[in-house]
Image (cartoon, rainbow, N blue to C red; front, side, top):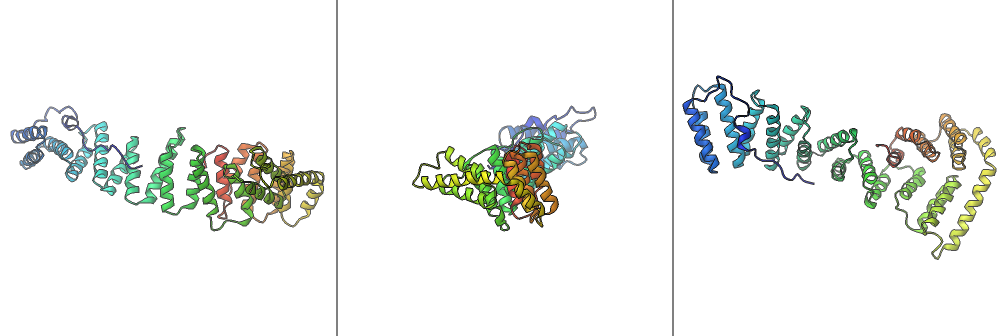
Length: 404
């Protein structure tokens, strides 16, 4: 991902006659003669002779502003083509600062200056020039590349992440999908700065735009790596793994189904089992008979829960907190009564659940299951905290098709 093809020199024509000379703009004999010598030597690639002639022109006393400007043009050309980074950058700075240099030429010079500094491994200088250019409204994408890579190679990972995120945001604002390399570099910077929350979002974006198993695995790994991950989110983490296509074995499907049963959500357990059968993971191994018995038990539990859900609702209304209302409401949603279920879940949140962020996560998932995509995204984006609920919510936000 390192910068390739950097511009290190501009053609001589860029420096000479960058704008029509004014009536009073003439070169004196001494300055003109020395610059002619410099130009001839430069054409012959005799760089020391060319620079000596430039210095001789600069040593002439009583020079006009135009003569000084023309000398810097030639100095920049000789220094750039000979690889004298220090002299070239000094000359570029003077030319860019001059009102004689047209805006388009200033842009070329800024790009050349930043590229030369980068190639010379003067990363702070390259970043400074590129950053100034971008802040002034410059749009050349190569300058963004130089800025980001200069920060990154210079191990200024925080600024590299900031610059890369800004470029991605600007592109997405006009409907351009970020490239895989951009997201990879952003993730690398965030890993270096140990910004786990931001890293999770970037892996989610990678997995969404470039759905490779490794990226989905990183999403799950990032979620599980949260040192404050709540045990109450184990089912939610496994549902992320399931949605990411990372669940492959009968044991994994059974574990997730059993977790759903323990959470009091039998329809979700049945959905998991059905997916296992539809993908031919379940029902074909040595445990097929056990798997069938588990499924039949779940089917019966779903029927019983449906038959007794009104009683469960009454009991939930009498509970001291909103947890039971949330579970009962979620069951209503999974049983096809979305309006009633979501109403109960909102009542559970208003009553006060054990964990408000886990409650919002489940409400968002229930809204998504009910086909209320926009409401689901809004709810999921409101999930906060540091116990892992926000990480999981970000996964589903992007999975539903919205920016994290």
